[in-house]
Each structure stands twice: as C-alpha cells, then as structure tokens.
Image (cartoon, rainbow, N blue to C red; front, side, top):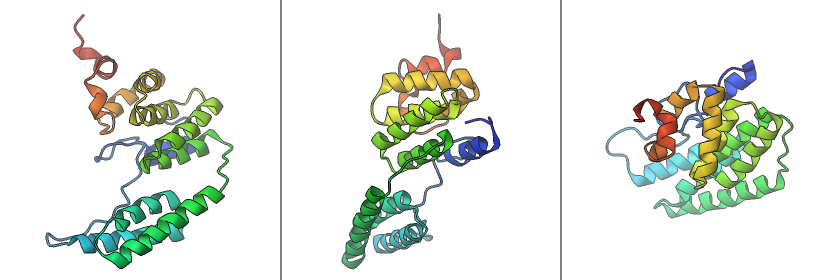
Length: 203
C-alpha cells in the first residue's frame, strides 16, 4: 500500500501484513495477544493476561480487537475468568451491532476492513473494502487488502484478479505478497504462482 498521500501511506504502513515479520506495507496490525515471559507460564496465566489485555482494548473502544482476546480468555481453564470473558464477548457484540458503521472516505472503509480481516471477519471485511474500492478504484493497497479477504473466504478467482490489479498498479505488491503468510498457501498454486513468480515460469 504505497504513498498516494500521507494518510494513505500511514494506513498502509500500519496495516498491510499477513506474515509475522514486519513487511514494508501490510494488512495486519500487531498481534494484540499478550506474550507471557518465561518457560513455566501456565495456561491460566495466559488466559488472565489475555483477559487483562482485552479489557484495556475494550476501554479504549477497540472492540473488534478486544473481542478476539475475550474469546481467547473464554476458552481458558479458569472458570471465573472464562465467564467474565464470555460476558464481555456479548458486550462487544452488542456495542458493535448498535454502532452504525458508516464511513465516508476510502481510507476509513479500508482501515475498518483491515481491522475486520485481523479479527477474521472476512465477510464484513469484504463489504467495507469493496465500498472503499468504489470510492478509490485506483488504490493498489485497497485491491491488495480485498484480494486477501477474498482469498481467506475461498474466493480465489476474485482474489487473483484483485492481487493482479494491485501488482499492476504498484509492482512492489508482488514482493509484499511473496512475504505474506496469508498468501503463502496459494503462492505456488496456479494461477497465483505465475502472478507472484513470473521469472520461474518456463515458456
């Protein structure tokens, strides 16, 4: 997601990455899952740490990210923490349903779509990214993010077309996709292989 204007560049750098190593432009935001230091960390500690991290996100209204961690905590062994986490999952759902999400700019739709991809809500992510693309059809980073959402939902034909367009608009997207863990399962399958590794094709 290259620089067309400063805010677009910031969005790209903050959000387009589907692999663990930090890519120049990526769709994934940093993993909010708390890291528990030490080799003797127990599942209960991890569960509590996830719940506490989720509460911080919840209080700053980062509901999608908070919901992911609450779900993680809800599956843990500590019953009281699991019950509180499940309650907060329901609260996140309620608040998200009550919020009429309506964005006016392509970048707002794009940023929200990326957050939804991170939460693996790919169906809703596609809707927002498609809206972003109707507003800014020449934006390579939106084509890239939409291609990812489509690939994650199993729509490989559409994913290939949008990734092809993203690379056409900015050839750097080819290298980014090669390093993208979420595209990795498709990278060596037709027709993605010829798109990502044209130099390896024998004519």
